[in-house]
Image 1 (tube, rainbow, N blue to C red):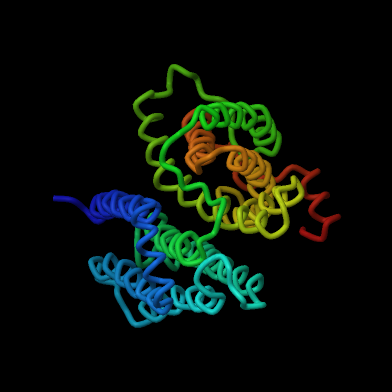
Image 2 (cartoon, rainbow, N blue to C red; image 1 turned 45 degrees about the vertical axis):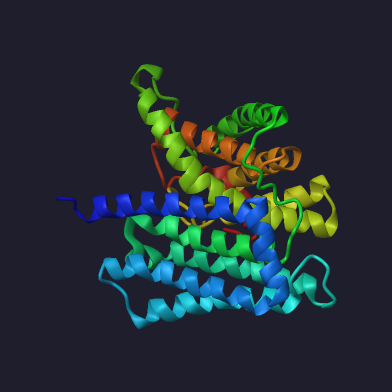
Length: 330
């Protein structure tokens, strides 16, 4: 008989399969065409999406026996606010509303920030257990996909399922750049320990780690930070390296609340900013989000399987303390 951990893991895998089945339907040209036509005919139909996603979020909590009014209300409010903001902008890329910029920006941050906060405080983990990351990021990803890719008919989100030759090349170049830049930086910051003996590394474990990280972490984060935030910024302000760096900084700052070091984790934020620039450049030059997600997954897999944890999780180099103090961050 499975314990709660086993049930959570199985449920997480089932959720992943379901989410990517739904995503495949949404990004299909034929399905997308019919859904967009339905929304253009009667835009208020978009409010069916938050209702369905609320039910999807509530179901696993109910299975765990932890469903209460607080979670139900929080979920309803969370999915309704960005939906209302985007609905008020209008369906389709050509709209007359003058407040498009601010409403879309608020909608994006309403999709992202509440989940960051809920994850940091372990609020979501109380309700969802080991399925937190999959469901916690799966729901906003599906909602963002419906709001921006379908309802707003936004360009440049790169949801091709097929790969071109350039996508493989960009993956290789991106991973090489990540190895050259991120490993020395991470080691200098004490972010990770020494390289492990290659004889102690299990190929099977590496492959399983890559697949799980690719589908469970990299794809959902790449959708949010590259397809949604970076692409939105570039559609508004142009595809310059300055805008790319701004998007990378947002990605980096989202890691301030991540361990293993003491919070706010400036080491992780700085390294994640460098990583975000690399992932963003790969995304920008590729025809599909799969390329940047693959680089993202490969980097995380290498970190977890080829390097030990840092010897001290709390010791911060003196130069970093001084730098933080100078910036008013100490």
